[in-house]
Image (cartoon, rainbow, N blue to C red):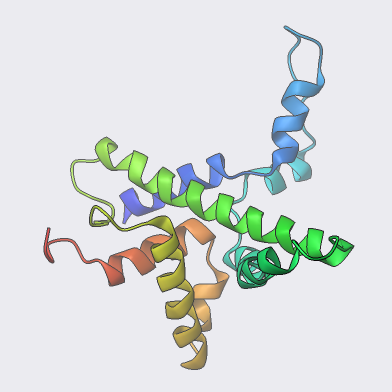
Length: 165
């Protein structure tokens, strides 16, 4: 349990808001970054909520459909928003999966057991289907979690350690 929480905490730090990064580079070279305000600092260190990530990921299918259309017409503002959100989804999920994989050597036991050859795209697709099923069953507790924690729960259920490892 503590290892899982540590994994989630590391994901939260690595996926904190870009505002914190902008604050760090905003000052002159060699100068210490300005101290963030208390409330703003707390908001920047929280993990990406699963509900926010799902809102972004809802645009992925639309983005793939747009790929075919954009060769025949100029992009609209809505098209740009769809591509932006879908790209954020794909980047965030890739970062979460990579963080989970990178943390594996830090522990004596495995946090998750993702078989080799499983692509991030397959993990994301499986997770979205799993979340749809949970939603139909009324299991809304998962949607209150931070995205990294929800990913770990899904991966543990989809790929239990010891099953074919």
